[in-house]
Length: 442
Image: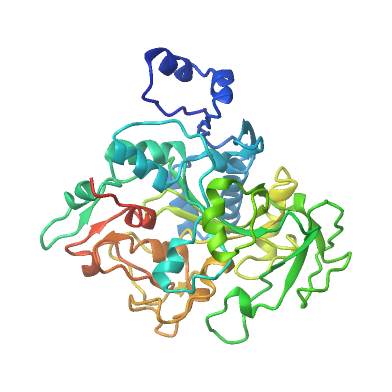
């Protein structure tokens, strides 16, 4: 496993540059610098990062779910440890919280300087909600984060500059930006915000699929757990069907969640949804998509908080839960996982595969895709036209369509050939929708 601390360059005086490059943590901490940190080796037997692509393809071609699941848990274990770094409010940062966002990287390119990260990435509305035309008042917030390797690639290749992306366009052919390096990771942490003024707060909890396929957002779930911000909860895997009925069994501790206290930089957007929000309210991590460039189509794993992590609902499973390494403890252990290392099974090649004789892989995140209805998925499904809702998707099929053009549809679960005629006269963005939504005029 590749493990090191990566420091971004800063355009300051030579002495300051020298101090930061030599790992002067005391100086950095005194100036509230956040040093993006690489994944930390979780010391899990058999886990390697980045894993050789031929190894992962062998797992896929032999349907070795044991290896795939353990690898996905290893990614989670590598990006969630608490570091020694703190944010401006003095809260310790987890590995993924030290990473830069696409908007921060685009800003660096816009001003032509490299700079040191100083603040948490502000919360914002999930970009896919805007793309899907969902209502503005959905109380879910996100950040997007690039690992140091992914950030370095993005800056060196200037992939957030529209002019650079346009330079890869080919008339009557498929254009493509360069591939991210194989140790690149991108993730989408997703949050609910609860008030610091309430000792007990309710959040909606996903407990499984509807009886018939449909758009099934959190307002339809009707299931809740309660969070005790004083950490006196004793939740035992129970839940409530009443958002106003906390009991000792369905109330969990704040420490059962990955969370942080909201700062001023995030408050302005949160207030557009919740006018009474305050600095110091708690941003609760309810979900996270994670992609790694270990294979051409990236690996995809998605996590969400669940009251009974030993018995999570679909699209996770008890098999996935039971393969969780014992070294994953405390708050990170309370999250369920689903994964989509392939679009369909049996696995198909990047080019020249088929939608015949295969079954779809479902790997959505309840807090992000479950509300999507059939109007969102404008890329025709060649596997099964009845697959038309967010609960019938996987990350790989959807991100395969990430491109630079006016035609940017989403897809439900199916095989998508990366040489499909759809991509002609477009620029493929190496599965990174986050590039398309953060392009700058420079």
